[in-house]
Length: 196
Image (cartoon, rainbow, N blue to C red; front, side):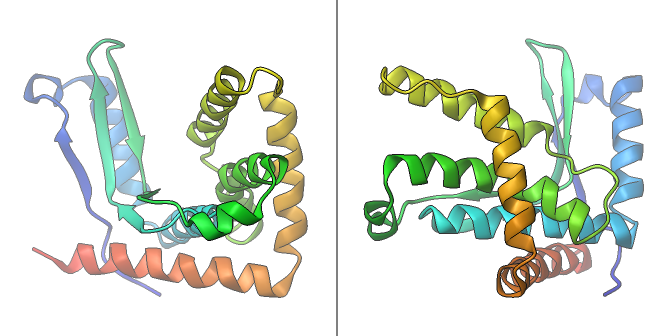
């Protein structure tokens, strides 16, 4: 697969911040990655693995979000995202078949899946999963706040989830499923790149 560089949306960055050296550095770094086939494949695999993982815990209606840079005024920080997937809904039938423990473990696996798959399948030197770990930490906080009898160690859960993903990726059918969703993600971005 070869395509044009993927588009980078900077519309969420205030105009007065477009000349900030931090923004320029992040923009240049992301644009270089979005033009590199190896990185584009790694980004697609990363998001494809999330797509498969979250579907297994019942998340539905996956939406692929384009590469973007955002600015947090309160923190005076820029964040760059090469790609991301979100979900709008929950399949209650799948959720109903899972125990709370299976759901928590599955959610952790879905969070960790992207970085592990990017390293294992695409050979990425960096899984780009800092934000995914942050999402898992927030998930653990919500569980602790709503289920006082459950205390989760986010780091231990993360490491266990990463191990589980490595094991899952050794299964040819699971790996093919991740690669199939990764192809959908890649083609989405390739098509977007062709748009004026």
